[in-house]
Image (cartoon, rainbow, N blue to C red):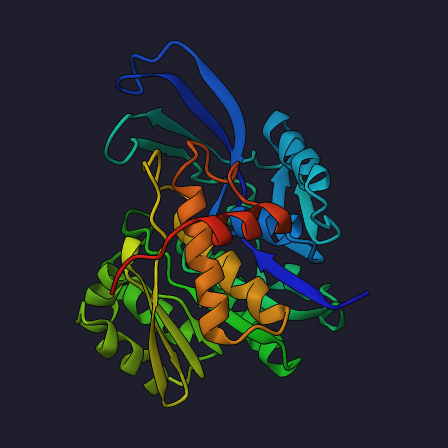
Length: 318
């Protein structure tokens, strides 16, 4: 079996409002699973890759839902840890017809927030060729921050290809200063960094995609792909830089999960031997597909659906 992709993060129970309105007025919710790393894991598994997920769940209904969902999506749960002392995190998400949905987290003190460096020790890195991390998990607690630093260092020692998506969640960090320092330190271990233009303003003082690419390349990244929203992405590989156009879609339903879809496309493209530019094109396609679905990960395509979308949709004019 080909070596696979390892991710670490906090999957959460997701309650999605069934009608529009503020979260305190909604009477019905549907149940799903959310989490940036979970979205990437699901997308990669759906495209046929071996994927494993490091996390910690509580012995409760949300934990059981997540464990079952991982198995149903063919995601290896051998690195899932369990605790009876803490509960699994969950979140509420409003339904909107335009703009971004309202989100409310119930994750403080969650099972995943207690993941520690000791929990990283049992991982068999020989099973993997790639590891993908985001800036969300280290934001939760000092313990998850230390665990992610241990994981990324061990992955580097094992010569895995490391990709890092800053995925800013300022509300989860003790301060912006700690957020910027931690995320840029983690980025120094990455082969590939996937920032967005808006994130660049906070993390490196510029919204200019060329300067963002310069910054992360100066920290040691071989590859940097700065996301330009619906326009596409600015791709830097060594001394080469190219703009990859986004895909035109008829209607944006929900942008949540689009960045995760993009990361999934880039990663799986590289794992399949595509060039960085071709991988970024795949990322743009999956990100666009995600925007046409209301769920965080329902739109993640199979290889056949991905090919059909890329063959039938026009690119943005540059």
